[in-house]
Image (cartoon, rainbow, N blue to C red; front, side, top):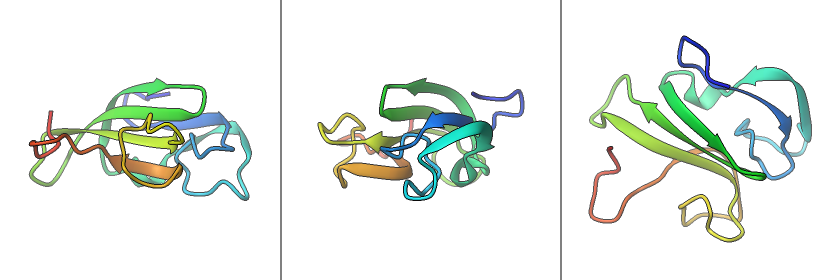
Length: 103
């Protein structure tokens, strides 16, 4: 869930890293809303959750980008838009071909 302060809190299953907490071994389920620390310095504008992956649109507070899409979780069918591992355990910026990734 996104708070009024634009912080992302997550809960539920984390077996495929879909909570973005950076760990799946110790955090298989999360019953209490938990801040996604890696996005704490960014304003989360919107979030969309699949069964095993998550995407968010974030407004950068610093840097060259105005806003970016972040994605994480199960990537077994490239559903995160990232050319990385099959499981992405923390939010990563989705790069758009021929673009700097900004929206």
